[in-house]
Amino acid sequence: MDSRSVRPGHRRAALSIAGELSVIGWGVRQASRRSGFSKDRILRWQSGHSIPDPDFLRWLAALGMLHRRLSHPLARAVPPVGNRPPLNGYAMTSALITIGWSERVLAERLGEHRTALRRLISSHGHLPVRESRWLEALADGHRDLPRPLSPICLSPDP
Image (cartoon, rainbow, N blue to C red; front, side):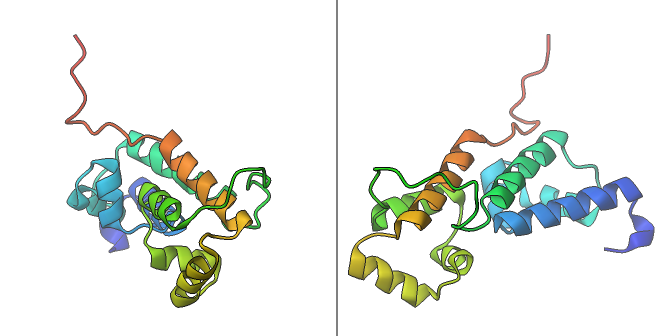
């Protein structure tokens, strides 16, 4: 990004988008799929060459806040272990699809090697309880934060 061609407000928004995507664990393509905004539009916003949609920024900031609050399985915000069973392989995959992560990103966030994570699930049949509650909380947060309406989806006011 050439700092001479970008206005200061646009630069802040661009840094905000890049930072939030990093915290969430998404790339621009995943953000595009999840938000409904085109990849090119998000790249323009990220490069600071146009003004980002405020609804997109609010949505992305809310997801970023969720991921900061639940940054790892030992975070204080992770719900206490109750009587729910730990996530099995199917439930884990469902949660990963909801969040928009791959198995590789999950293993990275857990501090495990991907092969070790697969072995853990295949030997026990499920994730450990604390990790299950953490992954469920993240998936629930993503379900509670629906994607922003893109300008194409909005109906004009009468």
